[in-house]
Image 1 (cartoon, each protein chain N blue to C red):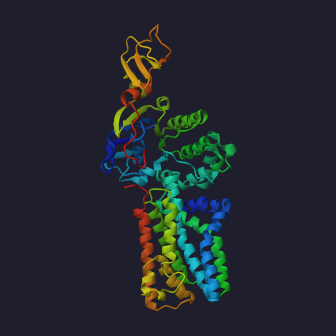
Image 2 (image 1 turned 90 degrees about the vertical axis):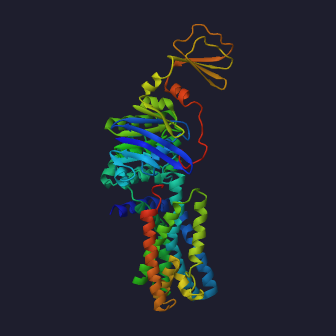
Image 3 (image 1 turned 120 degrees about the vertical axis):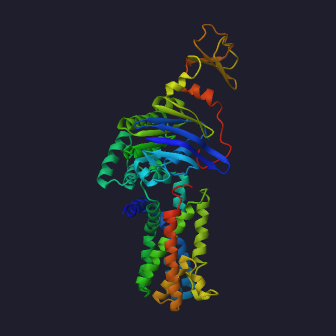
Length: 241
Length: 297
């Protein structure tokens, strides 16, 4: 309960307040996925637009976790806010989830627009399978993001790392294209974004996959989110060893 | 309230802290003095459960910092070295959110936030973004948050560095008030007069080791003589001194009483009673920066 409360307080200050005082970040968080969306719409028409919307939705959710690397590193190294919270009854999990939740707050307007356009185009993403995939993807990326942030020793790396991870997680994984384009579609479930995309592509009818692949994606995503949470609770560097 | 036994911390082959042993009780202000790299922040980070010691045992409020970190965190609060409040928040939001994160109810957190901002002279600027405040005000926001936490043990790591004289005294008042409440305060500082004025006990560290630990006046007693003559420039010789310290062109003579007649030859001379600063100068000597840079210290 305290973990959830901590997450909500962090999301309030780092998400809600930050968003209403710095609306440029709200726009900034939507620029990259929208640019992909436009390119896909131009070259792929309505079908391309659908892939762009679904891919952008997945990217935005994943970037909630990856994007927290910047905030977490700034709070730890830049202004030592994390040190202040370490010396207080605040859980690292609540803090990390709060940072991811605050990124989600930033992304809400973008996600709402995506959702509206998807529904208009008949892409029904609000299925139980897709929601499961999005929630577990969010948890997995938050765990990965916060854990990696703990290993960064210089603030300047905190700006570069999310960009590298974003590219790897969204272009390296079959987020904007079908997993069947890979040498083996099962390679697509190695990264959490790919696993989530396989489930969502299948569930929305964008790309019907064989049941074995979607089952593998579900198992992989469960393991990835469990691993992410394990890192969050056990290995995240609240205390320096 | 705080107990350290042979506490040490190593980074590779370099010992940032070693063999630190001391004990202080409830309601005590412990001043921690030492040059940069002495191990002050390393000690604070170990006691606030942020850094694992490489050896030794430490207890805060009777709780083991290694085995019971969650319990320790409930009874401590800290202003870390070089920390700043989140710049896009207002002082009100920063203090309120900190108290909510500590588990206080919204009602109680709001009450304490209002009270503490008034005490620290921040009520008038409560709705201004921290970014627009002066350095002194920003620092006061941090100290105010920790003050409002009403923790049993409070760590203030160089809380007055860079502050103007007015802001420094507001922080000093906070330390005195914390002591009155019965809290134990660990105050690291570079300002010797600050440690002398506020501390019940002073821990002097140098190169990661304890040089001495005693009340400030006991440390001052260890300085030879009663007065110090600081002579800068041409050598205004003092006939009999119990000790002499040379710092570049400056000489410090430790004497029982200042001589009546001086041959100054244009030198600048200041005569003053001996102080804790003289103890530090004589025991720690020249400020020696740590050879290796670390995240702390």
